[in-house]
Picture 1 (spheres, rainbow, N blue to C red):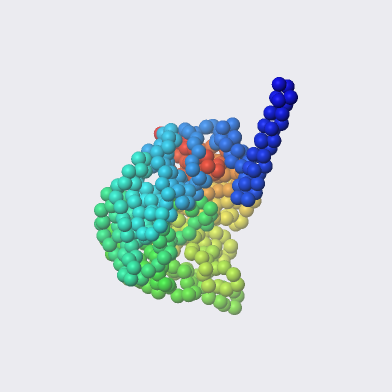
Picture 2: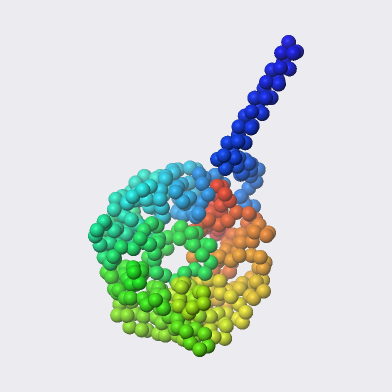
Length: 438
């Protein structure tokens, strides 16, 4: 009996060794690292996402690029998948495969077909279908509207304004040609860019109210739409030496040319209906040039009704897109990080202080010390100070500088809402409320 027992143990050991060897071989062949999965599983169960803890922490199907937040749901966008969780407790609600997806209105998610045209508009919490656009190639999503892009084969493209909840068509306008850059979710709009593009997915995940004027480029022609009247206002050619965007109630054009002392940059604001020039500025660099030439290669930066520029004396300023006035001027050595159109955020030359500058002529709104290693992100709902070196995320109110969130975490901010944020680390996400929010 003893000999048989020893032999049985040897056979069991050899069997286990064979299973391990097979697993290692398969891992090598299929480039699969089980230890990463195991570590992620262990981290989720032995550590918290943040301290203090948020309302909940859950594991989703993939690694979210961003998360949309409604009053009742948190919607994680993961490339080819979209997943919904209850905002109050993180309970799983639904998951769908998609080519692209976007949050619209206050409780609607657009989920495209996996291949081909069309998308479904579903309820953010339940996943039930509200309406369907079988011909939609893309969409621009806002809190009060969905603008769908439809380019039938062999026909002219159109943009339709739809109600986010019912899909009812409010108006349609011709686009003028086909532009594949407009296909998908929130692609191809001609607007001032954010300086810190790392935050773009987070900013776009929660829709804002639709602007009065929108622009898009098709074959070097800028098309401007009046969203209130539901009609195309203007179509104008943008020369190769220029960049043009729609900001506030102006078409802002930046043109560059070579002069003996370097580059001459001319910025102008034009009426979107008549095209008549409303203002012009020389000697302001809007960070549009790149490479050796003077031709603008990037859209001008800004936010809301403000543009970010540098004067000839190297002081950075915020200009009004409406009339070209200087709304705020940074101190020597300071760098403008971004703006929401109401406040501009600047950073000291040594990186150890940030300030909020009011754009209504009110001067400094607030100031606070930061670590030189900290990153600053300007979003519509808060200014975020994230520092991986110390593992901390702080959110302050843009207007007052009041702290609305201060947590110790190694996670990143993947979603922002007036009430709070979604933090994410790998496939683990969690919701944390801002102070003073429900």
